[in-house]
Length: 243
Ligand code: 6GU
Image (cartoon, rainbow, N blue to C red; front, side, top):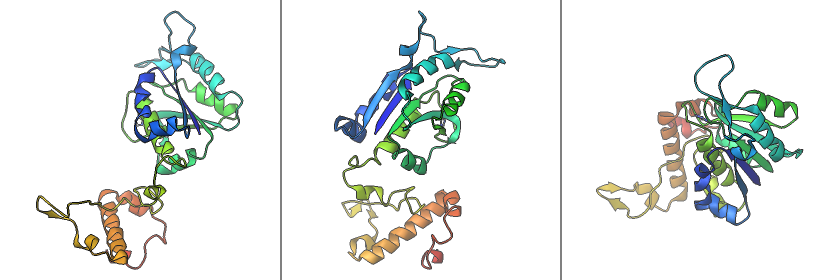
């Protein structure tokens, strides 16, 4: 998979060279390219923004500069999707990450200031490019760069070969079960007066699975009642309902 990220702060994306994503990049599992938007400016001051038409605070990113950048990167590749991080986007979830992991090419356009002129998304949609505006959650960041880090990491770890043991992807929070993950423990079995739950030391696999399921349900009900409400009708078995 190829991901191009366009930003006025390419250094912001440097952490993508670390850890699993960096390793995937070096191994050729992920073709990741970070571009400086100012490369596509033509004026002496390399201007990327201007005042909002209609008035108001802040600055808006100019469509002409973004147009030059995106024409080049999107080309006429029919298999590329444009992703625009913005607090006014649709919520970015594990389902979004799963969908994007199956797209051969992504271009992530990081806005700053009050955002990118709305005609940019409109223009590429009209040209047949799938455009998705995504938000991380209900709070405001200074620009799309942190969201680009989040999107690249969430998507890259789903690509074949990136996470060493693919079983790690099966039981995690926001996975297929629609529940948060159960609590996990390692050695030592006693630490500062806190014991690892007895059942986990029992070697009884069915009882361990039941205990983990109960804890996942309990935790989800407590912390994320919205997720319990959205479970499909057949998601709870007879044992689950005891809780
Ligand atoms: Cl994607 N961008 C910005 N600027 N702020 C956000 C966000 C994105 N998601 C939540 N807050």
